[in-house]
Image (cartoon, rainbow, N blue to C red; front, side, top):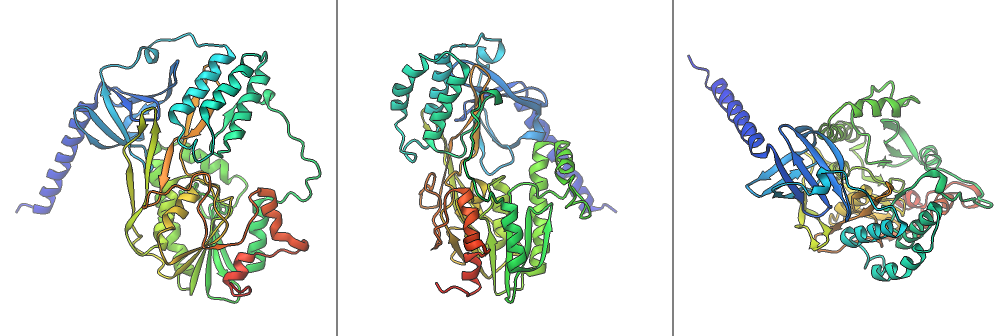
Length: 463
């Protein structure tokens, strides 16, 4: 007697394997230019090489096993769409061959003026927020080029680039310059320099009960004392993978051990592991505190991480599938195709009222959580507007070898509004200081620790 189910499974596996082989054959020995981002992709048999470019050179960015780095979303003769593990798909156009600068060693310009021009042109082509940052980029060129032509040392050049970066005021712009060229900043009379871990521990001691945590405190949960209000603090949008035993999660070697396990895995597996870790721990969180009158989600001390983790976490606190944001990237000729992201609620989700705590320290992927939550009426935001840096970081390199990053992706809400630069506003404003040190110190007015947001939520302060 023929086992019909087994036969069907064998046929499906055979078809899947055949499709994968056909896909591999179609991609073999092909070259592609990415829409936006200033990058090229070369695919050999089962490996790839990803190239980063500027106006003068083409350099290998990363290479490895293709199936471990990209998922193929779609492919036809001239168009390829890949997903690198995040929420943004990358679009590529087929080309006959890579530019000569990718295939041969090119002598790089060494003058400060030539390096400055590459820096300026890279921002001109890829940076998406000159208008939001109130910056005339052409005027920057006119103002700084004469100064660049007069400098004589690397230190002077580094200072000028750092001055321009400060003028832009974007927390996702970074200049990787040698430590020997950095100017040491001496803080006069700093007073008490508190850290976020100090604030988090004081919140726990003063306000919470039955506190538990996971992966060295990346997420903590419990209930507010003398109430039926749940509390979840998410400190980062990374490090949710279930790599370390519960016994070792709070050991001093946690980070070292976690990073070692993660580094042994391919990039796509790392993304999958992060999301699987969220699913596992959120099941426990909701089992522990899901039966509550309302829930507090605290992102005030979360500087970002992976947007996939942020939106996976958010899926546990919404009760409807719907579009929550769109993304497009800046190119030298306009923008890439806009992509809409539809948030899918988790199978087991929290169904009550949610208070989302935000501050200027809520940045990057944590802001994407807040942006996604923006359209859900059961989620009420309290605190102050977020940092205003939503884009993924695009890394580039100067001819002299210095690396720098910029923001090239535009995240908007379903109505097309972007909050880059200004941050996402809150429903109830508590006027937190924008400066980090002042924000931390604001919890200790008169030397006594108090959290106005949690006081408000628990009814100690009237609205």
